[in-house]
Image (cartoon, rainbow, N blue to C red; front, top):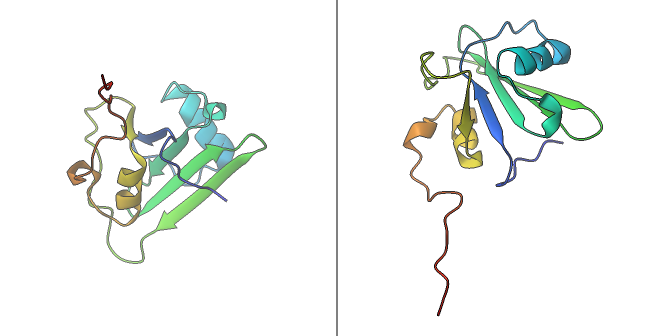
Length: 120
């Protein structure tokens, strides 16, 4: 089971991928196009060309997990522009919004980490 934790590193691939790709094909995209080691524990998010489906890929230490969400109607409305670099970092609450077809760029939440003042 995939659990999305607050400390999880989530990388969203800006460019769409061919959804005929399975685990090995997406691992190759992680290495070649995103320049990231898929065995490092990050969660990768990919979208289809028609924006109607997402695939999530992660490695749990024993093997890969591959999950897919396909909308029954419509398309995912938000996605970063293709002018950005290969992958965009998302916070866990932003991924939850994206999975429900929301706009993560409008997520009004406190930063995941901030320095606390030292008392005294």
